Length: 333
Length: 271
Image (cartoon, rainbow over all chains, first blue to last red; front, side):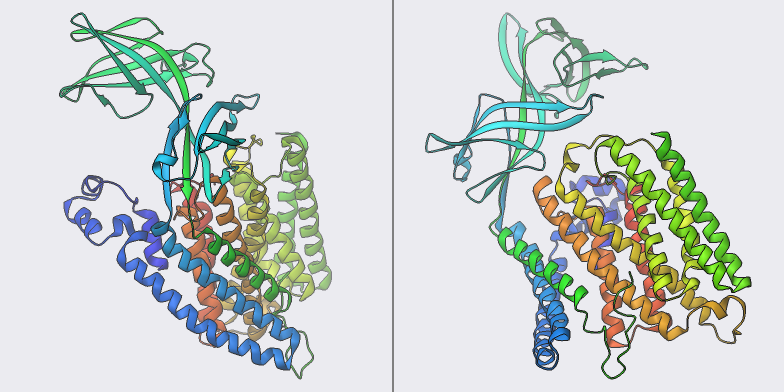
């Protein structure tokens, strides 16, 4: 498992098949895909190794438990140390079993929502909806981000039951569901003017090109506080919309044909028409997750930590009977 | 960077370098006074480093737990403290002969990457950061010490060597073997806590308690290598030279987790 895991950290995981044949050549790339190395930690053979480890742990823990019982009868303190190790191993079984089951029983969804919107989580099987009140980015004096905060209301059956903040490291916990602050982005409203007609378009900044038909596609990047850096490249000085600009790229048959930077309301060209960006809005990226196995994992964490600490304090090897001498095994510090 | 922080860091580097020189001199003098001077210099290094870290913490308004430089200096602090305590408690100046070069090398590297403290990015603003890093210092400090002792073991345990010079200072093999085991057992307990506090924190910050991020995977590999060592040692099959080699491999995975993953593999960890 160690060797497999090491390989799993070197070979990028869960990419599209094309990535592997491109990166490693057709033969090795195919081998990586067919052996499951491309998604190693979910492959059947890695799962079997994990199950194997659980079974051996269970057997060992059983014998360890018997040893701890016998030792406790003879010597309480040393018995306690042996119990520590037993409890540690029971904790490890909990953690490993939930490691195997968590991806199979938990459910997660990404939700992007702008302030004022209601994220309909109930439509996706979660027990409540979220009304997004506001989203703000707190900054340090040097301009680097300090915290991302989404203010929202929890709505159950059309009624607001609580209002709370979601920020990084402080997810919302409600009815066994956790909602995390994950990302944010900008949404742009544009009009395409072509042959006397107007087509409205909603497009998110920094995404894959949006198809506008069989041959045309559009990609945009929003600069809330636009400036040029010393090399003449466009940058944003902050995330506050002090000087908003939109960079757009128009594609025809996957080839970029027009690229320009526009102010809001300013018309830009594309072959056969014009484009105008009217509005921008910031949205918050939330992750909604329900993991029914989490309680068991945390039980495992508590057991393993308690076991390790008990063993550290009452190490059964510390004093050897008969000699009365302190054994150097005890601690190193 | 505050000049006090910078100056005391340099002083600590000098103190550790002098301690290393003193312990090298001890190989010839073999006098208790030389060894005591060496230990006093390690103590001076610890104190000056503590001043440097305290100034940094006050200036930044947070614990120095947030980037590769800060963690490296804490790891050195843990290793130096472990060397001092183990050396005095078990009266083994021999350990310091091998630990001080590691301390000085890491300290010199830290010197080249030192920079002013930056404010914490949102993902690091958690109480779990403190527990996660504090347990890691103990674990890595102990693993570093066990590495130094494993090298001592391999140097001492060569056929046909005489009991003179350096070898005479080193503790006898049986004692050394038990010390390596004890140190690793101590470090392993803390490595377990590193993984658990990290998992609890990841559940709050990243939305999943285990995501096979390269850093956490390599921390797990380290844990597995030492788990293998501990089980092999108690069963009696991985003691002596084999055990010493395994503990060197264990420390190599520690170093890879720390430097290799930080600089070669990309992941969610900031260092």
